[in-house]
Length: 334
Image (tube, rainbow, N blue to C red; front, side):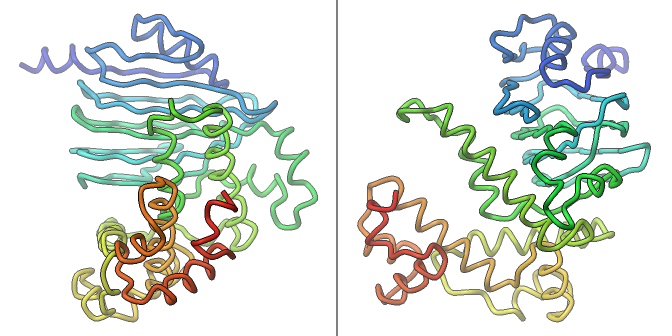
């Protein structure tokens, strides 16, 4: 039985910092042929794909969407050339997830659902271990040093040297970023310019991350030290996301569910997501409303009712506060 497990395990070490080189090397490891820098995973490894693309010189990305049919260990060796690397990843049905950077354990999770925004660089080593059955949706954005210098050298505190010195930075993925991330995996065959649509979502995710760094610095929005606190904060976030069509849960109720005092919950949540509990709840409602309007299936009044508003005027005011235009003007704005 132990021998059988060893045979099923896929253990891959990458020595390539360039994502295009990675996709060809990993496809060789899996004994499949890549097509236009995309791998359709073989059944013995998983169900799904990985694809690599370049938006502009110095800015490349990798998108993965798969379910593992085996245990998987992925390691990356330090590179000679510097790249800044951002990971936006959603893990579901996840029996076991472990991530180490420079031999320091960053994630040791046994939660079924886990999401993370992680920044590191190509000078670090990395080891990721995932269990069979895990579903992974993720985006990796890789930025060359020249791109950082050209784009950010005049951006005050966001000097590229700061990024070069930081070995690892971890944050929660907020609701807006999760929506953008999930849009990468939707069927876009009906869209007139799918590549522009795809690249736009990636650039918006990158912009959101960089704006957060400009506003708050590298030290803000880090994960709590305790895995238990991470679990509880993610639990509270999930409750707020699901409550888009109902009244805001009381702080006292959320604190009980999060197994912490109201004061500690408010402080921990704001540090994690950069905003308070009610603001997070309200922003998610408005983005949910915008998402419903995008479908073209509902009128403004119907959307207001769906997200829990009895007064259409209050809905319109809240929508305008978030997007700077009224929901009735959505079609004109685009």
